[in-house]
Length: 465
Image (cartoon, rainbow, N blue to C red; front, side):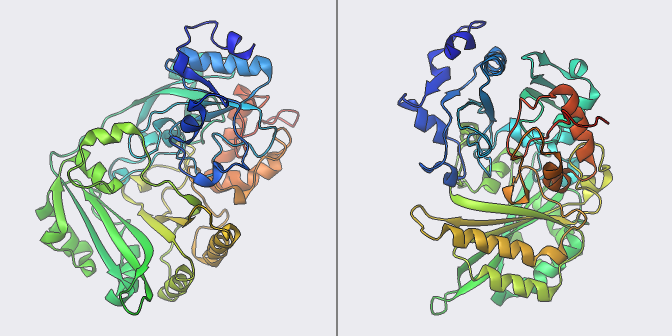
């Protein structure tokens, strides 16, 4: 009955609808999911998956799910750190999942990417993806398709950084294009603890957010074999994109960050599209068309967390951090620099608030293999690391990036009476913008049709603003 009413307003291509008994169900569910710990047999699965080929299919999915009281989950690319687009931990697992596969790099779908902010290697030059959105089309709770003019400025504000799957289903973004030079330059320079990594990273902290706006240098921190009696060391890899040629890059680096010791041979001039392949970890001869596949190069069992840093972390704290990283099997940290355009946009311009005061963002990750019987050990480790970092990151609130969903921060266990619970993680993701998001949610989706463990809750049944 559900499928009959589902597509009564449009032709139904056979490949758009799959149920668990269909051979293609598992492959469809797993195709772009990044975090494998949410695909294990013990996790609940959707009863069926709809892959829309037209926005009318999305409208039909919303209308049908609302009429039949089906819990609808929305999936874009499947990057989804906590599996919220296809796993429900707050209510019956009897729900459907709509897949909007529109990603470019790895498994990241543009739908979910922009709803959380959308950062990239040109953020210091041009800001976030949300800072460059000029229009959108959204399927609302009533199945209507609304553009910017029809949805109004409050909802248009909310969807540009207020987190995915709270206000409706985005079916189209209109983005202002920005210029890039014909030649850009990339480099990766790695320093281990034995190569003065601690002092170099200390220097990076003081300059990364003040560098030329054409330069983005992130730091990837891992544990590797030191080559001495199978002992381990910590490596810091400085991975960069410069919007210009190698000659000018060297001048900028020699003036602003000479301690890294960048040389001409470390740098590679390329085109902007090929720089995406480089940053994503593909080999130099990979054709750009691979970016259209939307396939992840990082599919693991993992747990992740995030922080925003406003003051440089002391060297003694870094040394304690190295000791903790060396205790774990496969730890990973990524430090992304801010400054530039990010420091010139107000915290209230969009729901994404981590702007002027932020020097850089930290992502913490721990991964493990299939069959590892010590999953709790890895998750306990990252939680202890997170606690260790508490005094050195943003406070009141301690910030977190909404696109790195972290259920440790709390979740909507009772979706209609969870405002106080939601405010715990809500202010971490959105700071003072959280209350405005709640107000918009209350107006456009008062009964919380679009919901998940950390969706914005309406004030249904509670005092209105």
